[in-house]
Length: 121
Ligand SMILES: [Zn+2]
Image 1 (cartoon, rainbow, N blue to C red):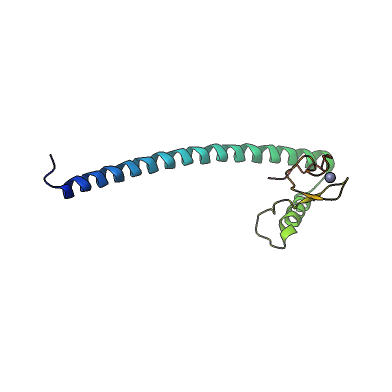
Image 2: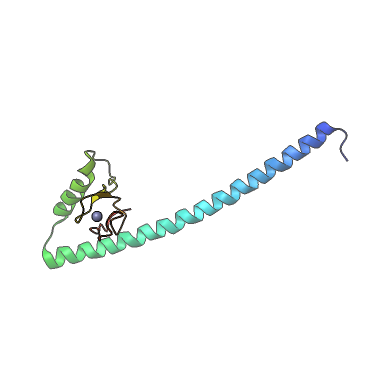
């Protein structure tokens, strides 16, 4: 079948390269599917935000300029106007004052409930 060990190793390397390529293609397809799911989630969230903003404008009289100003203020929390939010800072416990991750619902030191931050990622 193989004329020399060199040919054999070339065949093994070629088969491994093909397997690697197949794995990479499968991973790329999986990632593309995940991106599509996220894109659909973002689209749905944008529609919900737009609907809620419409209610606030109609029912409470807020303006687009006020919204833009508030968004800019959030963007500038880290000192940079770059279209990105800054991860929530560590949270001091209202009971014992020790610092906890902003993601924790309860203080790891005393167990007290921590203030809820709905926008912690
Ligand atoms: Zn505490």
